[in-house]
Amino acid sequence: MRKLLIALLAGIVVLAAGAPAVAGSGGPAAATVQESPTCEYPLELEDATGETVTVDSEPESVVALQPSDAQIVHEIGAEDKLVGMPVGQYTDYLDADEDLDISEDDDLTPIAETVVDRDPDVVLAANTLEGDDVVDQLRDAGLTVYVFPTGESLDGVAENVRLTGQLVGACDGAQETLEWMDERLEVVEEAIDGEDRPLAYYAMGGGYTTGDGTFQHEILTTAGVENLGAETGITGWDVIEEETVVAEDPEWIVYGASAGEPPVSEGVQSTTAYENEQFVAVNDNFMSQPGPLVVEAIGEIASEVHPEAYDEAEQALEEESSDEMESESDGDSSSEETDEEMESDEDTDAEEEETAAESDAEDTIPGFGVPAGIVALLALGAGFARRR
Image (cartoon, rainbow, N blue to C red; front, top):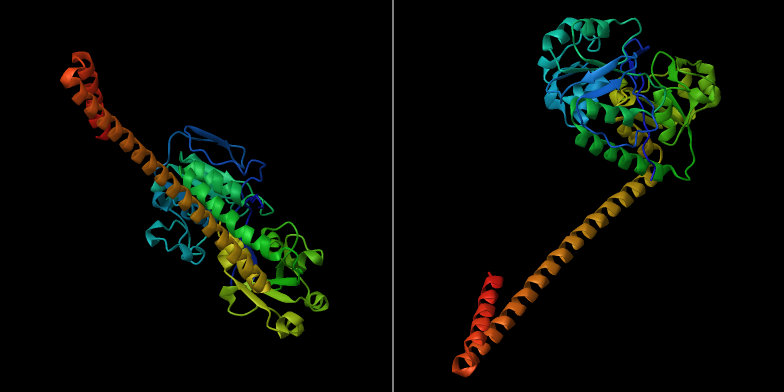
């Protein structure tokens, strides 16, 4: 089974104008991501700014500055600790109370004064837009802020989940989330094993696509397709020429579901993907926010491009889980039967001792002497005590 090594980076949210904007950040890509999170306080961690962040005791109140931070806190089951987060189009799937909102009208940029007023025990800060001084303002106000490093691959999502669990005191929930992510990725890995990897164009709108060194590139390749952007030499996020897309003739077009239909130019409509309507509409937020639900975006793509293999892999995992549950159940039953057998043996021994004692007592009373009678009576008492 593939061990999940996943790390955070700046996710891309496609705005109405079609240009990408940073919506989240990454966590450190470390070789220790497979370690189980441990909630021990005081906790000291060095963050992306080089600051040593100290959390003296388990936090009771938390602010998540970015959508990806909020997603992780919800997924590890610590949402009750949230006293602030962005509430709007990028977090609507979390069904958060509007009173928690700490963002400007763009549903993304945190308002420092609002965060300070919430007086949280710890602030989770995915890297924000370049030049943003919110973190400095919060620290100047005396708040404990942990800034996650920006990553450039999937290698840190798991690490970020683990760290968030430690920072907010939800290590068990973080571990469960990591195991769930591994399960979902195992289905995808099984499904795409040995399958052809068709060329896919990730249409972000405005001509933008994603290339090497991006979070979305690894989503695509992990899901079992080749990324057109990377194949044509794009690094990061950039505009790809219509002629290039047509010449490469992708078999699939992946796009954010909020667009309603693939946001492509008229020329791209002549490609095999468009003419055969081989589209994959993915949840924009899952595709752009480096949190646990990224595995859902990967699954959406894999299940559309490799439907039969994906269904078989999912069914196989379900059967495996069912077999494990039955095995555990059989083990429990065997244990119960063994206990019952032991109790039955004890009762049988007690009854035999009781019968023998009664026989000895009867023999003693007629003429075997007082000492033998006392031993028999003690044995008889022991039999009653053991049965109780």
